[in-house]
Amino acid sequence: MTATTGSGRRTLRWALTPLTSASTVRAGVYLVIGGVLAGAYFALAAGFVQMFADPATPRVAVGVLALVTAVIVGSPPFLAPVRALEIAAVRTFLDVDARTLPDPVGAPTVATRWRGAAWFALHLVLGALVTVGLLVAVPLATQLVLSAFGVDRAFLVQRGPALASNPVGWLVLALLALVALPYGTALARRLLRQSAEPLLGPDQTARIAELEARADRLAERGRLARELHDSVGHALTVTTLQAAAAARQVESDPDAARRSLAAIEEAGRSAMADLDHVLGLLRAGDDASSGPARRAPARSLDDLPALVDDARHAGADVRLDVDDGASGALPRATSHEAYRVVQEALTNAVRHAPGRPVAVRVAVGERDLEVEVTNPVEPPGTPGAADGGGRGLAGMAERVRLLRGDLDAGPHAGRWVVRARFPVDRERGASG
Image (cartoon, rainbow, N blue to C red):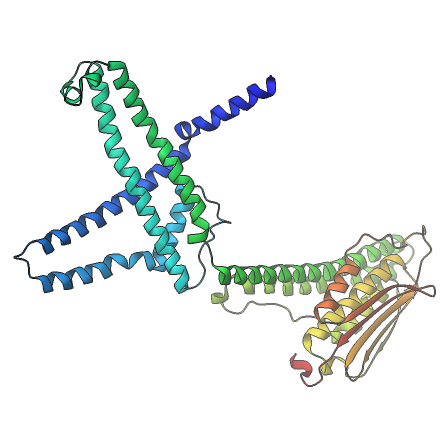
């Protein structure tokens, strides 16, 4: 019984929504605007019909004038600015979500222009129907109410004695005439909302372009996130370890403490340079008209010695083995991503195996670049042992995968091995 009562109340609220909702009023305003425009078109067409019906009117001149007028008044529905205004009006008056009707981008195609013109015609037709209903229903309801109270009953007497003798019926008819308006408006609103996306929404080409642009934005965000994770994460690891060492040595070995503080300063400068590079990339995408954004050069394998020095200052025993001229023979993107892989691997080694020997090897072959970072694996449960859950390995995998390379990271014979292979196109060289 309770469920039936609740369902009945919901049905009643749904039935009364057109009478109480502000959305009905907004849709009514939008439809009346369409009705006014339809009235202007109708008046213009009626004027030309009347001129053609007059034998004294020169037919050729009127025909040319009618043709020019038709071109002028028929062009707006096909124009891109009119379509943009229609989209804004639909989102405002018909409560259509911006995700359903996004702002138009680029020049519209021929099919898009015709769909916009079809929407314009649908708006005018439904607007004309609602406007005519308004112009008929309101005066009729007013006359019925006045007649029910004894004012000017001649209107109803002329239409039959049955109406003239039933004042209650007059009030019911007046109420029905007024109630029909919001329900008709709600019906027209629903039809327009259902037609908005197929007629005003982006076509298939625009949707594909938007999906591609969104994928590009997501890829760029992921790249920037990896840059920040690798550079700032490395600097924070070095800073934390050096700060702890300085705190232990500040009284027993002031010189060592000062070296640790100097290493902290250098790590901070390096992180600031990397941050400046990332912010420069962001600014470059914000406003191309403002000129080239100032940013630090991207890191490459040429910066490996400084990176290894930072790790050594943090207490790691790092051995670096790099092929002569490796960086100069590589595309810039490959050199940069290889540097970031080494940086993240070193950061993990310093964090999870402090003080243990780390070997870094960079080898350039005929068709690929291979970087390898190895360090002893700490037993589970020991201080600094890897606990997983970070984004370092996932970030390295994304970097290598974007350049169509391979990554292998994990324990092997008692050591943690990170091995990345990047394909290299030597014909492109450093210009890649």
